Length: 462
Image 1 (cartoon, helix red, strand yellow):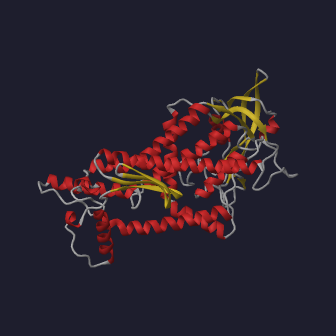
Image 2 (tube, helix red, strand yellow; image 1 turned 60 degrees about the vertical axis):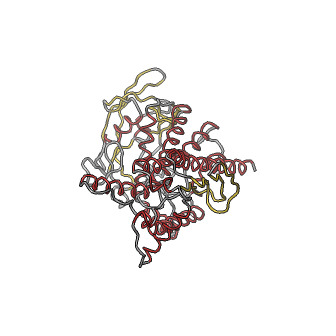
Image 3 (cartoon, one colour; image 1 turned 45 degrees about the vertical axis):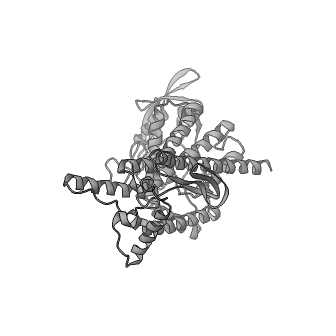
């Protein structure tokens, strides 16, 4: 019963965090819009039926039932028919755009056309539309700052936590009779040993050790003896160890080097194309596991870490249709999903619930309240980075679509100015509304599919 309650607590914390993130995103749009004189008629967190609302000044503030987004209603988002010189539409596309312009014009009070969003200059439009995503990015920076600087993150050290007994291949969990002994076991390395250098390479960090090990032996079937300097009980010792070459699949498991599942890597262990310079299928294996300890990071590492997260999320978003298709294919065919699989809000909620309810043990990812807090804050930071990147997709109804329209309008005006022509009409951004409808249907379909997959074929994190 206690674990169930803690699971619910984790989900509730996530939902509240999502609502706060959405609310701040919309504030990022609303504040500059009001500053520039645009009338904001509604500020809503969530979609669907309204739970609560209150009108203050000229803006209605409220909370809706479905916490999967939010919006601020900026009056005059689309230019009027007169502003763009629209003619009577003759196609479905044209009629849809005309309806959008008409609905937008109805919100403009008499004598307040100057307060319409479409009247803003291009720089002001960009400030308003970038305001939401940038707010999420700033929130992610704050959350990661708390995690990295305030709490600290698990960091692999040069101290050995454990030594493998043998080289496990594929799905093996126990050493079979004919298993090859792990090199570190044969060499006499022990838990608690601190690696000082490996094959002449100074070991200032675990990354140094890992890189030296992987680069020690890269030819299948040919081991290489190297010298390892360790500190044990305050004394320095030099031990010879014969590093064995192994091949791995994309999940990191050791497989036969003749297997089609082999993934190539460079000397540091980073996955690369097998045709890349320095790529190798085999890499050295010693059979040691690094001991971790929580270390606080300097504040200047936060932007770098957030930048790396933005890049990773950007790569996911760039290949989102392919990744969603892979999730659907695996779920339909009854195959498991890897930890790199894209998740819906249900999958993220499950992570939050598991984080708060899992029993602390030596084999779990959490060992106490600090770890739970760190992981929950990390999940919320990742969500905000996802909101930042996703909203910059240059298609309506996302912020990126409005940003693209504003940039197009600004470019046209600049060209007209350079040519000495009369100021051009506002860009008819309402013509993008049909694209927005198509995007909405696509995003809804992908969202429903991912939710279904996260329910019937959830990702199992180790």
